Image (cartoon, rainbow, N blue to C red; front, side, top):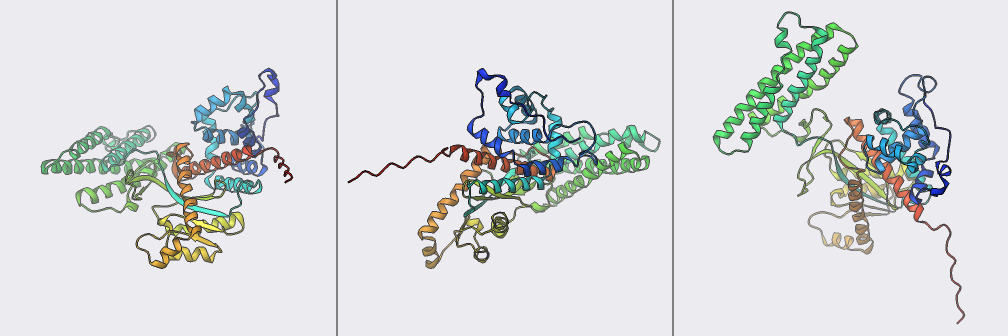
Length: 476
């Protein structure tokens, strides 16, 4: 049964000689997380674990503890295991997470609870935190700046040979597990469950070795190794289809789980076979949108943004909308590699929904500029639009961009580069450790949410408790 919270206990009063208390930022963060709407949204998702989770069963880890431990995890850039260890060992974090004298939840338990909170829920949590920032006068939403970045998925640099070898390994593993369920009946069963993993790995290594060599002989050897690797992969696909048919006929929950694994991986392996044949054997340029770069993170996109230090990135493109006060008011995980100029309208629509009014100033880099984007921003009520035009400019355009307000807007825009740097260095938008499309949304969402909570807490902690008295004017 889903439990709201443990009975409150002040651990600091148990050890008065230590004179323990929260740091100012942590004290403000503690008060922010007491918001009822944040609590209700998390509880609603946790309650969907089972049909009667809210009213029946043994008591769960309290919702309040789960929410706070997930925030602490991203705040300090810990793994789930480290979160369990450090929260359990710290009186301050026990008090902050409202764990008190209870045992800390196991890291695997925390992983299961975190997986129940959907990406859409985390996005709504962030909207609530932005509303809190507005009510606390941390931001007014008068200025808006945009930029995009790439959040990498946790994959190795992809190659067709490596993907083919991975496909053979995964299909062989699932077939090996199925052998105990469908049996080794007559009809070529020995060949049906044959494991070709070693052959595939050997051929993939051969491809890699010949790729480092030059000359026509090395190219011919690489082509021959690829052809043999494709034959091995296609044989594994045929055997996997035959094993799947036997599993469907056998029935049962265990067989259905293995069938789902075949249905997940076999289409991806077929796409890898097709792209390898087109790219390597036929010499065709396969579009980035059609490529598979990982069997385990198929949502990964191939993104080229013209960066000299990172010409090609593998992950997902993310748009960030930052308002005054250093608050990321909205974010969006984008599909593929869309042009930045098409993100102006969605960013302004999200701002209008969040704040109820357009920003007085909207700015972005040259990638966001287009005549249509400027017209859209003006139509939505933005008073000043500062989108520098790339390339050659007319005298009128140079005069427009030379105005004082435009130059100040460009300096304001540059601040989002620093914001992205902070988000990356502190791990809020580092390499994604969660799995799947929904996992990417959760990873980005929790990172932005934690950053905004920390930004609000730091701003509130830095405010003076009382305004200093103004000195009296001396008589002349």
